[in-house]
Image (tube, rainbow, N blue to C red; front, side, top):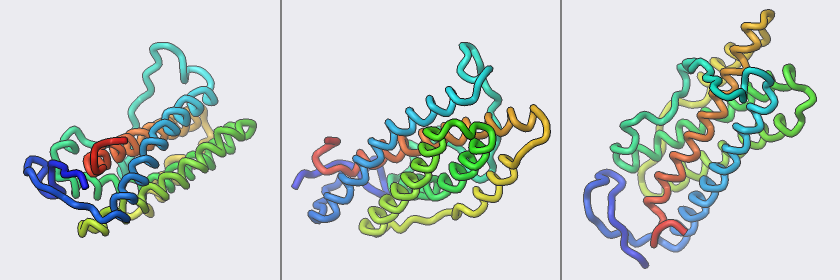
Length: 206
């Protein structure tokens, strides 16, 4: 069994960990899933932008950054946290994302009913985020660092309100921008999860 540097509680400490075979397999499987979803997230973002019409996708277009109280992207300080805390934050974000992605899908079903591929991709992303989150929680539990954090209900409430049908063009535009933000958050968190899990993969990333 390979030895690795790092610690769940102190990323600067040197230590040796011998993973049980089933735990090693679970870590590799979860990391591979996160790596795959990182690619899917990039495709989802591109597909979302393509379906929104102008000015989305135009060179130089910079959409406003809408605040979402229930979930934000990984903070700059994320990388400096102990690995256990990073994985807990990853799991909490992944638990919140399915409700947000479902809300985006429902709004897009109204705005772009002739974009079945996008709707399926959003549905798949919600299911995949849920699966990855559950896998990360399993890894944390096996390592004796159970996940903790807010559930997905606040995210669902916030998303339902923010993405509810608007009667004005401004309301539609805001809903499209918020959907773009949610798709971006999905990509940021699965990528962050992949990076955090890579530090647990015995023998290095494969």
